[in-house]
Image (cartoon, rainbow, N blue to C red):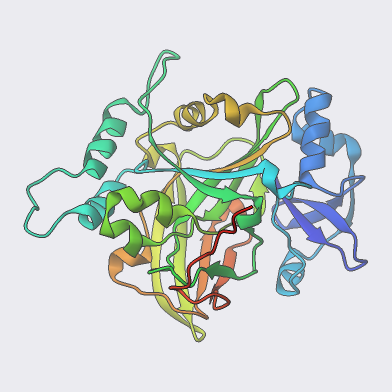
Amino acid sequence: MLLSQITHTSGSQCVVAREGDNARIVNGADSILALAKRAIARDMALAELIAEQGLGDSVDLDAAYAEGRVLAPITPDDPARLHLTGTGLTHLGSASTRNAMHLKAGAEENVTDSMKMFRLGVEGGKPVGGKTGVQPEWFYKGNGHALVAPGKPITSPGFALDAGEEPEIAGIYIVSYEGVPHRIGFALANEFSDHVTERQNYLYLAHSKLRPASIGPEILVGELPAHVEGTSRVVRDGTVLWEKPFVSGEDNMSHTLANLEHHHFKYEIFRKPGDVHVHMFGTATLSFADDIRTQEGDIFEIEAAPFGLPLKNPLTIDKTRPADAPVAVKSL
């Protein structure tokens, strides 16, 4: 089952459930988050709750998307209660790109920290027997103010040195009032990053990740397929500038999803009741690795069959503040 949130032609917000080409409004639901909270309170699976509430009118999701009526699939009332985070070097093949980014000239024989981290994951990211595996790389992107709806512009700050996509799968979670994380499902994600800043020095990774991100349009409810195939592309002036397939799912990863989830939610601060988490699981594919330099007006497109509608976002550049203008702090 796929779930999405749209603005109805009447102006109200509603939830749409889709099986194949059959997309219909979920009765009595104005947000996926509210549905998830109701399912937790009644100790029910989301699919069970939706079946109980029933489905109403059919919806043309393609038309809603084209008309700009598709919303981000998770929208908490307080954006500060949503955490955007992720893990890197989790996919088989992901190390080669990052290793090349972090090698110093003339030091090809050296093993970078990226390669060391990747090897740790290969050796210990898929524990057996209920044990805990090795920690992955982890990063913070921001809160709900940095979450961009499908179809809406992803804005790069004026001081950025690069504006590049990263096609990923994200887990969407809500923490219950008992402090237990519950996974709502999975969605496509554009884990937008500044790769030139990161390449200057690996310790700039934190800065390079403090950028917007987009997820959706639809959430896949249930288990993630072990093998996911998708396509990522950059479109410029109506023409495909760059296109490449990507794979995800545990068959293509050096960590289990359970291990990645454990190492995020093991921190008590990420188990605060009512908080929402969008946690991205990494990628091995990005246009920057093929020397593509994006520019304002380019459109990022990410698609994979299990996730329904593609994720599309145009790129804009924030010109409201000069890149070298300092932020002044006032003393009280």
